[in-house]
Length: 149
Image: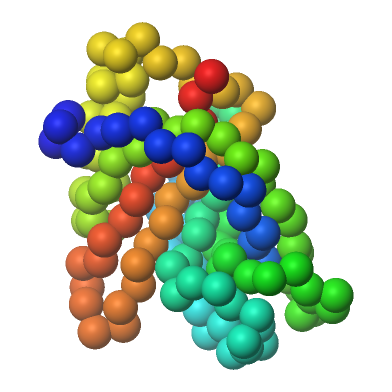
């Protein structure tokens, strides 16, 4: 798995989505609920969507996490009710791939690799999970991105 870890540069990305904020103990259940709710609203974004991938940026502290379900879109003049538009700036990331069934294990491996490579997490930047959802599959590809200094 460590050989699947790499460093990538991601350009700035415009996202539109909905969020959940709560204690870590409520994840991943609330994250899955949030993604399901958002996918059901995908049609509200129509042709503005640039990629079928579901982006889930998140940020946490010792008590709780804020987790998003978003699509990459062109810049919208009007955002659907209850949704928020924001841009994640360009960053360098430590990155790996896995499936939605092995996310915890993939994070463990990614953090081990970062330590071995002497990479430090960029503290105020958001990490991102990118899901390549296929309604016909229970197990789908996921990319994990941790911002680095």
